[in-house]
Structures are given as structure tokens and as C-alpha cells.
View 1: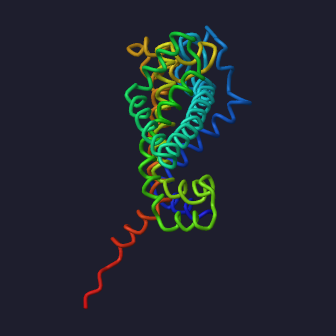
View 2 (view 1 turned 180 degrees about the vertical axis):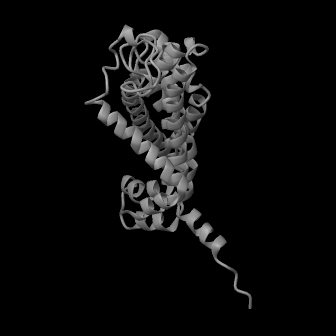
View 3 (view 1 turned 90 degrees about the horizontal axis):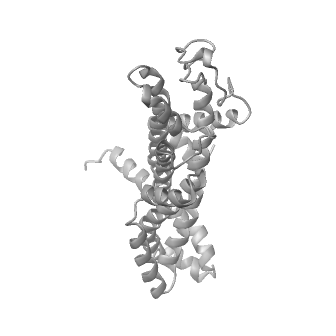
Amino acid sequence: MPRWLRRLWSDATGRFALIVVAAIALTALVALFWTPFDPLSADVRNRWAAPSWPHLLGTDGTGRDILSLIMAGARTTVFVSVGAGVVATFVGIALAALGALTFRWMRETVAVLVDILIAFPVLIIAMMISSVWGGSLWVVIWAVGIGFGVNIARVTRPELRRVQQSDFVLAGRAAGLTPVQNLVRHLLPNVAPVFIVQLSWSMAVAVLAEAGLSYLGFGASVTEPSWGILLSDLQRYISIHPLSVIWPGLAITVTVLALNLLGDALREATDPTLRHRAAEVHTPAVVA
């Protein structure tokens, strides 16, 4: 087991977040092949069934099994969060590298571009794109990915500039490493802790964005299982069947919380400066 993973597992917060994220990913994988019932199949005779066997979380107003809908919605959630994370990674690294490691005019141009793009809220951009091209998960992925890629670039760029002046980077350059090799071998590993926190935040916001936009009708289509659509359908009956609304809301809340906690725990597990500070705190002072 890698050392950083052992440190992550030894931390209670990291262990909790890792278990929750793994459980959601496993649920999404299982839902690709099996759910207790067809999530889109209505059974009017079992409308608003209370949680019991075989409907462990009950049914909705059309008789659909809520557990099956939650499991199928996990597929959408994982797809959107991973897709937005991949887009944010490429956009963030590309902009940060251009803004830190290129010629001065290029650095200044990228800095101005990032400042302009960061002024536009991600959800507003997604809603504007959806109103023109229609609601789609790809709209959510690209809007959130580009929006938070800009955030990643803004935070990572000064870190790259700081690490670029380090002795080991200068030694690598003197040894003949190309800028790309120096970026991959020395720069990115040293800014990884900051990058990880921003990436986990972008994936958590992607979950919220998909649920929120689907709730408003700008995200997933009605034929795709989504926690946001399920929450929108059930909240109309919250005064009559309040228990049914809890499940999609709880799924969204726990997922976003776990992704944020996992990012913080990963930062502490991979950042050597934090470990050194913790060691100094726990090391008793020697009195002469």
C-alpha cells in the first residue's frame, strides 16, 4: 500500500470520506448491470409504498422503486463528477502552465483571461448554454469543468511560479530536462496538494450543479435517472410523504460532503510541509 494511502486511511476523516466515495462508485458500477427494479418502470398499484420489503426505500407517486432510482442516479452523479474533474484538470493545468512557465506577454495574457473568466458564475453559464443547446449532462460537465478549471489555474499558477525557483527545478533544467519534463517530474508533484483540494471541490460542485440544473430542468433529460430530477418530482408531495424526499437529498448531501472531506484529507496525506509541521508540533522540546 502506498505511504500516502496509509496516512489517508489512518485519519478518521479521510477513512470516512474514502469509504463513502468508494461506496458511491461501487453503487454506480453495480447499477450499470443490476438494480432491484427497473428504475423507469411505473407500478401504479404500489404508489407511495412505505419502506418495506421488497421496496426498501419505498416508492414514488408512480410506483417506481426509490432505491433503484437512487442507484441509477449514482451512475449519472459519478459520470458528471468524473467528467467535470477530467475537464477541469486539463483546463487548469494548461492555463496554469501557460500562465507560469511561458514568456511574459503570454503569462500576462493568461492572467487577464483567467480574471475575466472567473467573474462568471459556473451555474449561470451552464443555464445559459442549456437554454440555447438544450439540457444535457455534457453541458453540465463542460460548464463546470471549464469554470473550475479556471479556478484551479488561478490557485495553481502562483504555486508553480514559486516552485519554479526551487533548487531542484533549476538543477533539472541544468541537467537538460525540457520544460515539459520539468513540469511533470518536479512542478506538478509539488503543487499536487493544492491541486487536489481544488479538484475535489470542482467534483463536489459538479454533483451539486447536476442535481440543481436537473431540478430546474436544465440538466439531465427526464429519461435519465438523476437525483436532482427525483428530488424535483418528490418535493411536491413533501407535506404528504416527507420521508420519500429524504433519500435523494441525503444522497446528494453525503456525496458532496465526502468529496470535500476527501480532498482535505488527501492534501494532508500528500503535502510534506504539513507532515513536517505536525511532527514539529508533536515533538517535545528538549530543555538544556
